[in-house]
Image 1 (cartoon, one colour):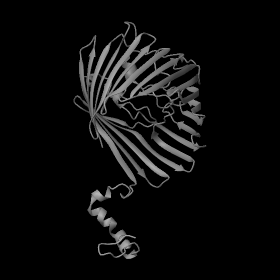
Image 2 (image 1 turned 90 degrees about the vertical axis):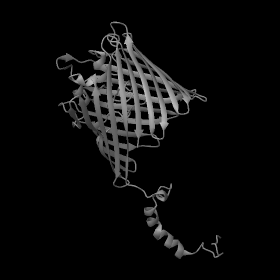
Image 3 (image 1 turned 90 degrees about the horizontal axis):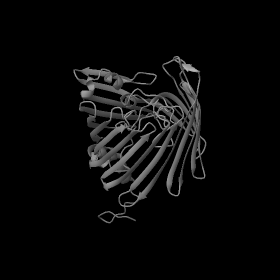
Image 4 (image 1 turned 180 degrees about the horizontal axis):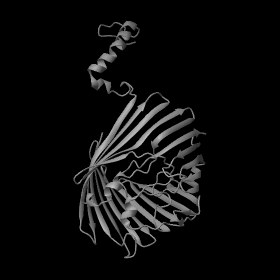
Length: 405
C-alpha cells in the first residue's frame, strides 16, 4: 500500500483518481512536453512527414563540355486514417531544376513525364528554371480481417530481388537512379486476401491511356520450409506474362531469383514484329559482420530478346519496364559496402554488359546530425568504342544533402 506525505493511504482514493483523470487533458494541453511522453501522447488520426534536399551534379563527358546542374527536391507524405479499416495516402514530389541540362530542348518534357492513366505531373518554368510538381501517391485503402483493397496511385512491389526485378511488371526502375528512393507509383485497383501467416493472393487491374493496353495480373505468394516464393499470371500491357520468384537463405547467404515469360498479345506493334521474351535474374548477398558490417552482393540478369537503345542518355533517362532492365542478353552486377565509422558507410559497385559497356560507382553516406544526411556519389559509364556506354564515356559527380522531417 502506498502512502502520501502525511501517511494517509491513497491507493483506494477514487475521488483523487477521478480528479486526476479529469485534469489530464488540461495538463497535456498546457505542457506539450508531457504530451510527448511515450504511451501518454494522444493518438493521432494522421501522419505527415517528408524531406527536402539539394543535389549538385557535375558531368564530365569525354567528348563534350563539362556541365553543372542543380536540384532542390522536396517530398511530402500524408496519411489520414478515417477508422481502423479506412485510410487515405497522398505523396507529393516537388522539384526545382536549373543549370546546363535545362538548356536541352526535351529535358523539361522528360521531367514532366507521367506514365500513369492520369497525368498528375505539371511543369512551370521561369527563364532557365524548371519547376515540377507530381503526385506519385494518391490512394484510398481498406482492410478488414484477411481482406484488403486499394484504389488510386500507389507502388506495387512484387519483387523478390533487390537489384533487377523481372517480376516487377508494374514498377520497374533503373539501378542507377539513387535520388528517387520511393520509386514511381501505378494507377491501379488491387484486391488482396491473406491465406495464412505468409501466404496470400493479390489481384491488380491497371488501366492504360492507350486502348487495348490495360494490365491485369494475379499474384500468389507463400512460405514453405524457409523458402518464400511467388507465382504471377496475367497481362502486362502488350504481353501475356507468367512469372515465378523465390527468396531463401543458404549457409547464411541470401539467395533470390525471379523469372518472367512475356508472350506478345499481337504479332506486330506499330508495324514492328513482336517477340516472346524471357527475363531472369538471380542474386546473392552475404553479411560478413564484424565491426565494419561488411556486406557483399552479386547479381546476374538475362534477357532473351533485349531491345535496342538509341543512346546511353536515352536509356538512362527514359522509364524502364521489366523487359528493358538491360540492353544486352547478359548483365552482371556486384557491390561491397562497409562502415568507415558508425555514421559513415561506403559502397563500391560495378556492372558489366554483353556489349562491353561497364559502370563503376562509389558512394558515401554520412549522417551529419539527427535528420541530416550527406550523400556523395561518383558514377563512371564507359566501355568499348562501339558499346552503348562507350560511345560517350561520362563521369558524374553528385553531392546530395538531405533534411528529413
